Image (cartoon, rainbow, N blue to C red):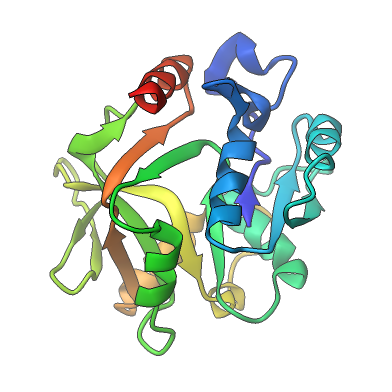
Length: 229
């Protein structure tokens, strides 16, 4: 699933006419770059949620024929990340699935990250497996991290005022069972992560490569430079 329903307000004037996933970085729409990575990994079907600029996104994406696309329309009201996934569950099926933010890019240096996630994912042990980027190698990011990761990959939320070494890339594998007792309507995936962490079933996998956050104009410019490099 690609999360593409956000308003993109932090992009300012850039998203007044276009939804953020259609903004270009390095001459190609962000969402096309994300979908390219799925195609490279052999993923054959993607579900994309829509809200802001839904018609434009549909029109743009119908031009792709290298994977099957289905849409989960949230035009009636935004559901946030967790609610968006929960709403799309009938399209996603009963097996674990990838969830990818529609405003990130990544470059792999050692193998394919989506393959690595699939190889590491252990359903008997994990409810969620998140691709983690060291904060020191995150383009366009200036925060203080999200998680501390144990030697076995077990994730722990950073404590208040703590600086954590890893940021969640927005690329992950989730079990559909995580959503059986979730709130109705709008809620964040952070609710899901915290539930999995409380059961010691939230794990991470270190990303070996570059990662770019694209939620501000300066992030787009930095990502374009990184792609050229």
